[in-house]
Length: 275
Image (cartoon, rainbow, N blue to C red; front, top):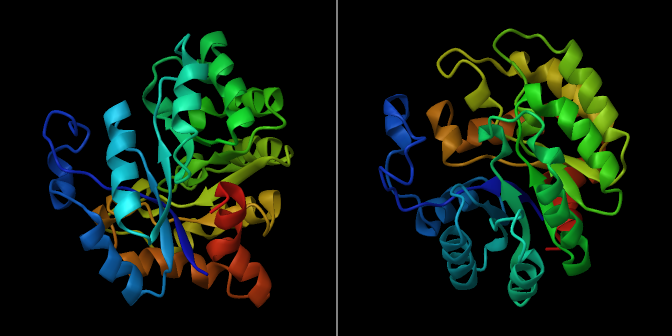
């Protein structure tokens, strides 16, 4: 089974979705399951994981409603305030929804580069495991020093790095990023999504070769058992069509065994999110 481990839905709102600026006109509109399903079918993808794009409880409810109505949405990564003193009550409430697999906070937008290590935030992360929830780590490379420490604090928590932590494909500089990703990968409970590649590159002039050295780093660091394919649709449409995004990954892993390819293209997502 092929699973797209990272995509989004939204009803476009210029206030809520202010992050979609003038350069992103192509995604300044609604994106719903009826838009994605034919795309997945055309590219042989069996299901997906819908990930929050807005930090609100309303967003989590919105995605859960879509997942309950469309069985190709195999799971949801929602949002809740992990810093809340009432986090136990919140998680107990969400535990009644089997399609809710985990949570994400948009840490890349936090001004404090060490946000992940805040005591109140870590208190929330610590509570996730007892409810079998995952956590998606969305950061920029400048925040990786915090991630290195963060993953050590939670050895029993299933964690996944979104978008390979958004390395600088434009400059091609990878040494510091690579060293930090290898350190993170030394924790066996941490996975990594091979997603969000084209939007971190030059939208108009990217080439598959730009990603090769970075992909080699995560394959060597995380291995075939801890990499997950994700499209980041519809954000990826800023720079590529769905098929182009998928092909970057399938071409890169084409020399692996069929069993290894299957893990990266779906098996690992099923295992990580308990789909």
